[in-house]
Image 1 (cartoon, rainbow, N blue to C red):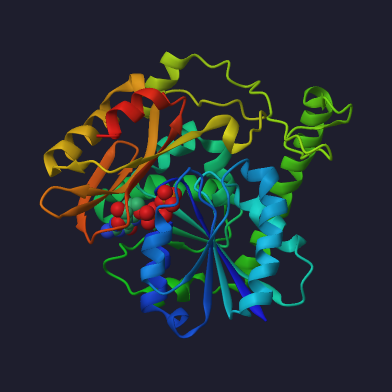
Image 2: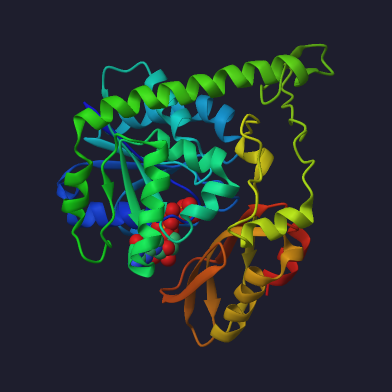
Length: 375
Ligand SMILES: Nc1nc2c(ncn2[C@@H]2O[C@H](COP(=O)(O)OP(=O)(O)OP(=O)(O)O)[C@@H](O)[C@H]2O)c(=O)[nH]1
């Protein structure tokens, strides 16, 4: 029997950091664990880090999170069970994945060998309010469907900010225990202990089912009305479906009618209006885009710092929400960096097989970003 934990959280919330902490400091370290990551981005960055920690990583291809997830993901999950018979499977969905979709996909796997154990939403206390306003469709779904909510970066914010974050969480989810203590002050075991709540799990399953039904009905409606396509082969079918003719039909982006200048401002202005209409549901790849860059350039610390500053401040590049990477430095050094909605950090690290980075955001200008970050 393999238990399944899903660790969701918006872009850069701290999912990978939390998983590492749990694997190191909690009873999970004595279990045979397989991690499944579903990265939204062209280059897997975390894979290398996690392999260092001795965990199997099975990265799924990027793409439409909602639809392609189901095919690829269920197959991947079944394969993992058959090949490894792990005690536990930890699923780290893409930051823009909807938790209710992942839960539904896991429930779809017809295996007696699976038991859903916990669904976490990691919520960045620093960005909670802004994400709630601007990306509620994705962000709120993760919180609403969670059996436990773990706030991250609470050491960086005021008590008021934590309260504000709690209010947002409680508005969406009244059953999940919420961890508000800074991760530096508690052990992985304490966090894991807080997430062992069967009653919250039952309620989360019901909440996720409702969220999913809402999505599903919407998708049907959506597809029936404006997303059916006639393929060159003469077949009529929905977007995202691989036709028997082998053609994959890119969906059309009907939703990009937003005023870009307004939205550029929106992400930096907490009081601005929500980006989406409440009832208009989207797939992640209609809303977010990403670019992966491989580079052999050796960056000086200052140069990298300068480039990340530009990424944070130059709105003509688009709304940059997340970037991470490993790049070669000068004098045999290597750097890894993390950029989350305007905040970033650069750390020295050990050499890797090649420099690579990814940038994820909304309406991003891939050419400009490439020119900036390639080196
Ligand atoms: N000290 C501390 N660092 C945090 C916390 N949460 C996130 N971080 C840092 O934030 C950055 C992003 O964290 P990740 O764990 O990579 O976030 P993620 O959710 O896995 O990111 P994606 O996979 O890109 O969505 C890293 O530099 C972390 O060290 C926290 O609560 N405490």
